[in-house]
Image (tube, rainbow over all chains, first blue to last red; front, side, top):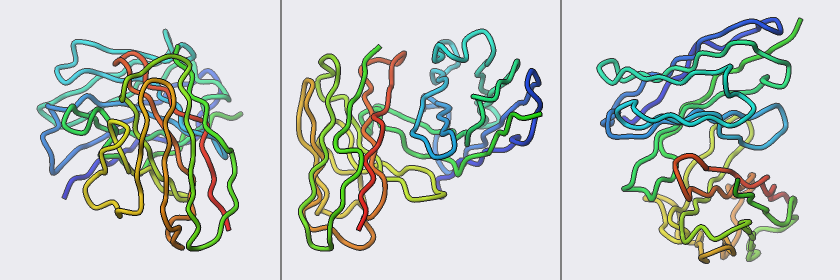
Length: 120
Length: 107
């Protein structure tokens, strides 16, 4: 079964840090670009960061540049998001998703998401 | 950055209706467009990629069309399981993969 499972979310104070993890199974993780997508409560989807199959290229949405770092460990089928300097507006469910050329770069699979709440 | 504009934001429909959702890109994205369905509390699921290719397992009542800047998602005969929020997403480059704001299909 193809699966992505996120972990690491929780309640953190403004200015704090969290590290999210995403574990893949049932597919060739190392052949997928991987992306973190977030969804604030009651809002739409926003791409946060993505990383190339071999980890050599990374992109970030402007609002998280210099605060968030995406990384991956293909030997462990794992994707990470280090989040520093967290703000209230970073409160969201964070999903990891994979994409590949065989599906026209559409995102599939998706994880179930992990909730990050930034509040004092 | 490429902006994606979906319309309508909300759509009221009945079982059996034909439903069309439109997505416009602020610049040409060829056919690098995907459609997703999301139900409350769940992750999105891929319906269509490359503007018109149906993902495996997705019912044939779903179809996608368009290229350049204008795209549509059509549900030919709305079923009870189709009440959800739908998002378009462009993937013109690896550094740019923006989503539309979503269309909620409600009874």
